[in-house]
Image (tube, rainbow, N blue to C red; front, top):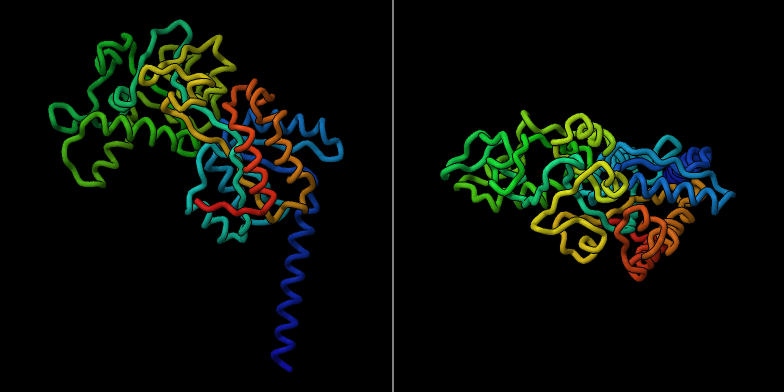
Length: 343
């Protein structure tokens, strides 16, 4: 009898908890989205068009803050005071997914909607940069190999790094660690450049530090969005800024883009894989809020539609490198099937 009563009480508490969560989420009728500054312009376009196409739903509220911030906010818990979708230009790590699970967010679904390139640009009237990952590494790493030894970076001008580069002082604005762009930059630029530079023998920890530590005298890490990086270049046009391709495309009247390994970043070279510094773009949905916050499933389907993310769609015109129709359809099928994300 006592066991039955305890079991009944436990079921009652669970039901009460679920009702409370549902009531919290239902108390809000606007989809809340935050995260990547790279994904921000695409998500903002979709949110506006979604509001026009589906007047029965409130237009989603889209904020920036960086990929890491968006994923952290998604994983804070379930309920009205937590966001529904996190935009990200980097994949969710196992540690981030574990944080979700710890806080009761058990149903995380990933949607990849297209691709983007990371570009390096200076003021429109500055010199032409034909860069490689090795040149970038040698320009901004805290220590670099010289005559078989690691020394504090001695370079002050790009043509000291390589005579083919312009006679311009080294100053680079890179994304802060809260941005997904930074993670891709570290892997596809710094790590690749570090390997090409030919480090002397050292243990694994020392090599990791040598490949990832940037100098503080000529490198500024931007925690805000790309508009802050652009402001740095407006103040110092000779500086090099790191941007997403779509942002560069929107500001190409004031910016000059560098080639990487001889390849100019364009929609075509990123789609073909020729341009070496590219990445998928995605967003993560909190499954517990689907059906509770109105419009989430409809927003995902609209985002992945041919009209929005497809080839020739609105987002391609805004700078997105589109995925194939079959791939977008597979993403929607996985979302509708409730497929949970696994790193």
